[in-house]
Every structure is written in C-alpha cells, then in structure tokens.
Image 1 (cartoon, helix red, strand yellow):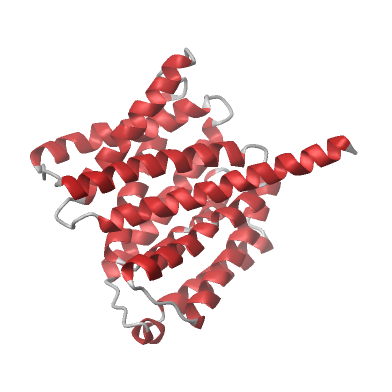
Image 2 (cartoon, rainbow, N blue to C red; image 1 turned 45 degrees about the vertical axis):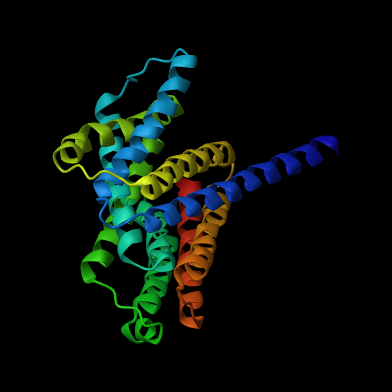
Length: 295
C-alpha cells in the first residue's frame, strides 16, 4: 500500500516538473518576442547556446565525464538538427502570433512518428495514419484564411514554412537523441546542441554584430535562464514517464503561449483556434502512444 502511494506521488512529482518545464519554455518564447527586431535571430540563438554551453560544461566537468562522448558523428548531427530547429522556432515566434507558432511547433511528435518509420524501420501503423490526418486537420483549421481574417491576422507563407521546418528539425533531433541515449550520458547529448550552435553561428554573429541595448540584454538573459530552467525540469520530469503522458503535459505550452499572447501582445483566439489546437493535441497523443509502444 505504501509503495503504491509512493509510486503515485512520484509519478505526480514528475508531472509537476513537466508543468514547470512548459511554463518556463513558454516564458522563453515571450522573451524572444519582446526583443527588438534589430537584433538578428542568429544572434539570439548564439547567446542562448553560449549560456547553455557554459552551464552544461560546468556540470560535465563536475561529474568527470568524457566531454566529447563516443558517437561523435551522431552527436554532431544532433547538434545540427537542434541548431536548425532553434533558429526556425525563434524566427517563427518573432514573425507569427505566439499561439499559432507554438501550435505548429507542437506538430513535431507527428513528424517523429513519420520519420521513425522511414529512418529506424518502424512499421507505419493505422494509429500513425489517424494521428497524421487528425493533426493536419487541426492545422488546416487554424491556418484557414477565413479563420485568420476573422482574427485580423496576416501570415507570411515563408514564416509558416519556417515554423514547420522547425518542427521537422525538432523531430529529427528527438530521434537522434533517442538513439544516442542508449550509449551517451544525457549531459553530453545536451552539450553538443549549444556547442554546434556556437561554432556554426559565431562567424555570422562576428561579421554582423548588433550591440544589444540594456532592455534587449535583460530579455536575452531571460532566454538563457528560462531555457535552462525548462530543460532542467523537462529532464527530471520525462525520466521513466510514459511518452504519451509527457507529450500531453508538454502541450500545456500551447495554453501558456496563448495566454501570454493575449496578455502581452494583444493576440486573439476564437473557437476555430481552440478546435484546431485540440485536434493537434489529439494527433500528438495518438502518435506518441505509437512511439511508446515501438521505441
């Protein structure tokens, strides 16, 4: 009886950590959107990665881990996918309403299921087809021109494509992390993401440097802090928790994103947005149920 109560409390504790993760990640998106548009996206990603690299390197050094890991090619690939994803996500946040960019980002579990079938020979199941159709139906409802015009929203096609590229890159990064987690320490996997970002973006940032003002600097520090806090709570919460539960709780970021959009950026939502985002959530649940059984 006591063991059962402990397990229930422990499971609840993990869920609370995921709620905090979604909350902090959503605050990170607010910081990105608050920064003056004169600061380039790649510079924001560079600062965010530099902060994360510093913190992660301290942890690796304290734990006396091999800082370079074993499977270097796959670790580098994970860093490349993560860098592309972050640049795309930041671009989408800046150029689209926060609630819509967040919903598109959370199509990544559906892409995970698709790419898992192609890249790691998972069977394409009926659940995957249902999940894909459900998720895309939700996206079509949200991005329907009449729905957007009712909210006085004009979306650039490039911004939408970049947002989906971010979701696709996130899914590919997730698959590489799954494979790496079999042999590599979690902090080594985390390190390669900001490491590759810093290496690839440094020349661009150096040649096109834009000096942040004091307000920008505050928001940039916020990006680093909230991202690191979100990553920490996510790492604690997702361990040994079913993928379906984790994905469902992480989808709270859509709620937080919509709330911050209304409070800070005067964004509007209507019944179509609620129906569409609910369908994307349903597709996410179905697709991650399939992932949990297979991986």
